[in-house]
Length: 128
Picture 1 (tube, rainbow, N blue to C red):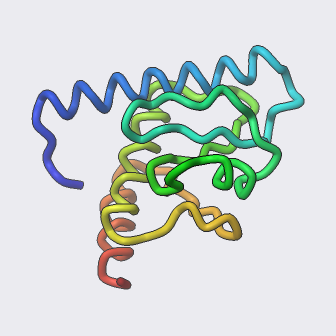
Picture 2 (picture 1 turned 90 degrees about the horizontal axis):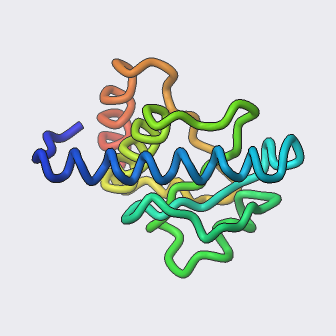
């Protein structure tokens, strides 16, 4: 992934904190019924529209610009700030490589290990 300035790093950290809080609050506020459902997270701000969607396609349909959001499937144990930071950075990297994560019929699986993320992004860029 590309180098970020200190300001960009801080902005990503702030967005990740807001994303983590939104995902975890959705889980805490509505309980197990939201596990496996979706939230749309603004890549610019890390905020959601406050809604939980039944499907990824529903989340996409309700956004003005689908590629300005990351789509998070709510996990059973919430989302840590570190997980949110990695996911937002990965999503941005894929969008910049020309990949459409917003495809409602495809769910891109982010690599589980940090050292696998950059090679995955390079492979996506080469495939385009």
